[in-house]
Image (cartoon, rainbow, N blue to C red; front, side, top):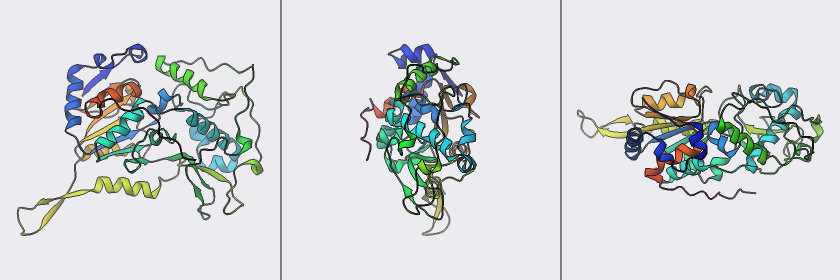
Length: 356
């Protein structure tokens, strides 16, 4: 395994990122990348940290003293739909005010250069589509903050690309006041400090993730209602804990891994033996690889011949690396464009306009 560590100081200040990478390790990765066609990327929340979006895990990962895993469930929505909607309205607000970072743009450009590159994203923030990532090569495993659907599955109502903020007046961010509570003083490293500062700039009003900021109890009548059945609430179009991934997305991913190529069979005239196409490279970016089935796709790619490159701030999130794999430690927004540069050049950084 090849290990590339970049200090937080260098991430924040150095203009020559390539000088910080081991030449031999970067060259070996680059050579493999250039010869790779079938590439899989598994993306997690760490990809968007430099855009100012919180990961809701690790130090400071709570929202108003709630663990996100206790809010992002069907049971929580049934018990307190107002609280759940405030959590997701806050995330929608921040994501709409955030911008894709260089890693989003680099991956989008790699998709344009490598038509057999498939990205499997656990992120619901909408930044990859806004960076122009080709839709056919981007599978949103956990849905999108900007899709909403009826809580009653038998109704079947779904609305995509709803970028209204707030989605209903009752979910508007409270207006700013002079006595805003201070942010938590837990600061794991410089990169996270910078992200927290960016996060504050994304909030147009009070930061209701702070439990010291009072929030109202929103009555059910003021929450988004389904325009189709007119009786049930709308809910965020994301995959909650305990729910299955969207069937269409799973089908597309399975089709990619199941793709075969005919090879001549030594015995048997005019017959072919169908052999699965190998995967050349798997990029694991900004994810702890703990949530399944997304985490399993790395192992699936490896079983099909892929070498694995992990890009993450936390060394402990690099699981099961083997000889010939790579670990790039640091901010994905800095590292990803650099390690892909031999294929993508200087990736463009102009955002695709949001619909609506």
